[in-house]
Image 1 (cartoon, rainbow, N blue to C red):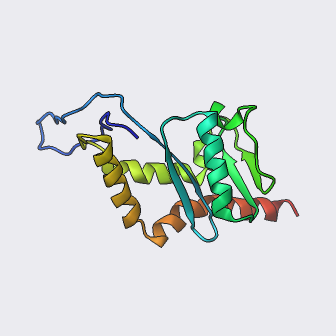
Image 2: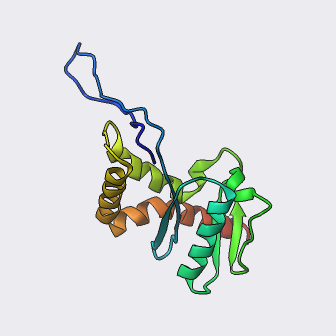
Amino acid sequence: MGLKTLTGKVITASGVKPTVEVKWPRENFWIYGAIEPKTCDHFLYEYPKLNGECFQQFLNWLSQQLGGDYAILQVDQAPAHTSSAIRWQEFIIPLFQPPSAPELNPIERLWQLLKKPLKNQLFSSLQNLRDRIQEIFNQLTLEQVISISSYNFILEALFYAASY
């Protein structure tokens, strides 16, 4: 997430060219996240970069949140996730999805849901952006979290049903 404006479609009268004010600063931060499809628990934490060091910090934080419960963490094959420096806790099992297949990961739908209300908005500071993102997360309903995370759960059930 950053101060650079996310642009999207704008509705205008017929024949009127839409205009949207845009900011270009490159200040940003990254939100790392995980969703548990059965309970809809979601774990989100902000970091300054997308790299192996920050991802390791997220894994350490997530393991504390899980309290020793086992979890399968589905991740894409971004360099931050596949770095040889990553030390996976014994009870967090990585499941690497195929390259270029974000539709397979429910957290990607959470990011889409998050970004939609941010389109065409200007933020004067990263803190204002953080506050808006927090508002959006606070407005998330259990039904929305179930909706975005259940797709993989259904695929998982089909996979298991097909493997018997």
